[in-house]
Image (tube, rainbow, N blue to C red; front, side):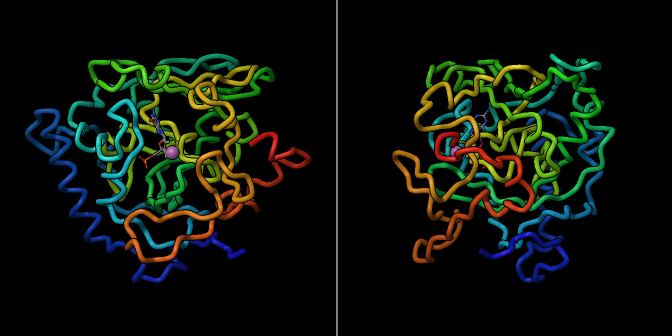
Length: 316
Ligand SMILES: Nc1nc2c(c(=O)[nH]1)N[C@H]1C(S)=C(S)[C@@H](COP(=O)(O)O)O[C@H]1N2
Ligand SMILES: [Mo]
């Protein structure tokens, strides 16, 4: 198995999208964001969205070639904005992620409701280059902007009853029109065991490619859990709840025989409809060979201990 954990300084310069492209993108996106809010100027963007010219690289970065921005933002699963892969991008302008607040509830000493800016303020944002591996058999390599989920959760002082963390997406048909159709039980809910959530890998992402998250990728704030299938990385989060019992995760509830609660990337355990042995890298030409899917998406060193003694065929 190849080692994928590298710092970004180990990555060949040719493999990285040049910073100038980031910065152009950033300018473009700011304009797009501002115009979607009917704001005229850059100066009116929220303060948290202005401070990412030179992000420090995470120590867990994957060494794969980045998936182009165009693919990352036009091939999406976000059923609240439509079930087709191109729907979330074409419907993105319907979803205005301003204003935004996040409620933290449940088994903790310091619950509260926070506006997005206050919620993000305590954390140093970093760039995390993580593969997102969808259970459907495709993957992308995305330079996220975010901060450690564990650092964030600790601020709220979970108590000893906090065995799990539950995350909930915004429920609002007027902003997420896909919720008018009952393709899933809305709102979208996901969950992690508390020790998984406290691992240093998962992040709360507020951006990609050096800028704020486009709506289709889960604006303004989402989870990214790099050793699990994509559907665990819940988008557009409005509620975080510490619970004693296992959260009723949307896809797990919908079809438990297809989508397990754990959903760790595992090439040995196939989904009933899709092999998990290989993955098609979005944005690569069709004639390029598929990539071998790695156990825990390559992060075994960081996370295998969480499942010591567990039957990963039963607890898939
Ligand atoms: N709220 C919400 N979160 C979601 C989804 C969704 O439909 N709704 N789709 C999931 C799935 S199946 C995947 S593969 C990833 C896709 O993230 P991306 O579009 O940023 O690549 O988001 C996940 N998070
Ligand atoms: Mo997915």
